[in-house]
Length: 283
Image (cartoon, rainbow, N blue to C red; front, side):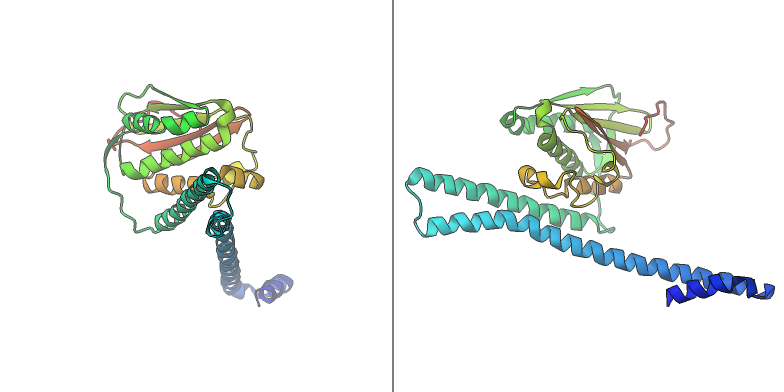
């Protein structure tokens, strides 16, 4: 039907009397709107199919491992207590991974609800990041990494939901650990203007994010290298969750990447709403 409308209007356009030009313009607008709506419906169906497929794939892998090792234990197919303890350790790791995947899916779905309410208060981002580094010391040492913090901010205070902002920085830190561990360090830097606070989180992994992938890194289930998905164990939702939270805070999140340096930049509005920028940051 839409194709016929487009064909008719194009083939007979010159034969339309001048007094009918306005009517034809209206018909064209209706035709274009209907075609656009049809494409949006098709796109929504495609995304829904991808969501179900990706969720099923991500949940199946750890669940298969859990049931496999439980079958071995149930049938007494282990040599000794040492091997039994190994099986239990693997089950525990996969169960923890499965829980994380499910939490990510619930969090992402919840954050897409426009009616979500932030529990806001004044948050000092320098204190928040220092606390995150302290809490992550063991995790970082396990992979041979170290987080370093520096700040030139005079007053890095924002109005925000502290728990949700912590989740943002945790997700970016975990992403840096997964993909930048060969670079040893993760640097966190804070700067501010009168209106906003800027946070850079940089890792020094050898591989850069390809420039063609930069526009998609904050999309749900996107992974730069699909072949690395099993190795990293990520849900593909961490950065999408981070962006959703930053959007709720009316902030911005960006990424730049080159070999041996990938930086995530977050800009959040400060508590004071009536100030003028003294600095400009390239994004």
